[in-house]
Structures are given as C-alpha cells and as structure tokens.
Image (tube, rainbow, N blue to C red; front, side):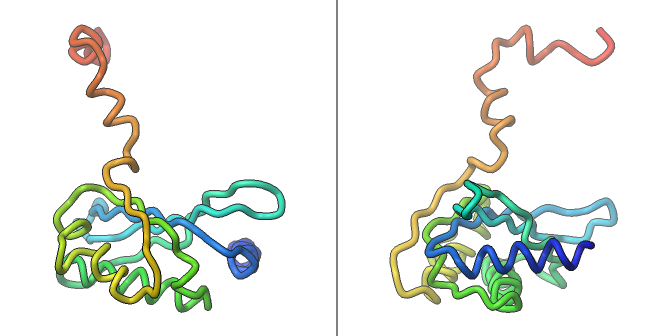
Length: 142
C-alpha cells in the first residue's frame, strides 16, 4: 500500500510544471540526523503537501550533505530539479549558509531563480513568540 501511494504521488509530481519543497533537519530518538523532505504542488484535485522522504544522514550534517540527500531522493523518483521554484527551510547555518548551505548548493545545481523562505516550517513556534506571557508561563497540570 505504501509503495502504491508513493507511486501515485510521484506520478502527480511528474505532471506538474512547478513545485515547492520544504526541508527540515532534526535528530531522532537515537540521535541519528535525518531530513524531512516535503513537496508542495498543485495537482488536478487541488493543492497538495506530501512527505516525499525521511532521509537519514550519515556522518555530518553540512549543507552539502543535506543537499546531496535531497537531490538523491528527488532524482530517485525521476523528478527534474528544474521544477523546484521555492524552498522552505529552518534558519540553521547548514540550511541558509551563503556559500555551502543547502539552499546555495541546490541553487547552484538549478538553471533558474529559486525563491527561498526560512523559519516558516515551525509555524507554531513563531506563533508562540507573540503570545502573552501569562499564556506561555501556564504549565501543564496547573
């Protein structure tokens, strides 16, 4: 069933003229670095946001390592890199670094301008920053 869903998703992605990706790097419970790769696109049934892959990183978590994992996943599904029109990431240096960051590395491999957004993946964290202090200090079980 999982393979069927992935195949349907990839077929949808092959038909679109543009897509956006969202990339977030984190560690799992065993301290293994991993990258979540989401794709956002317009399908014939409307807008979609799908998880394309949860990619483990071996060794370092530099921008180029993240870019290589993402590019490998996209190419594995035979999706042309030039369909990517925007990238959303967290604000970490490995993602947004000017020379060696993930975004810079991916832009280098692409033939057109890519819009970039950072720190919009974790919208709930941004939202909490605007909450009144009494709400933020209210603990569970109080």
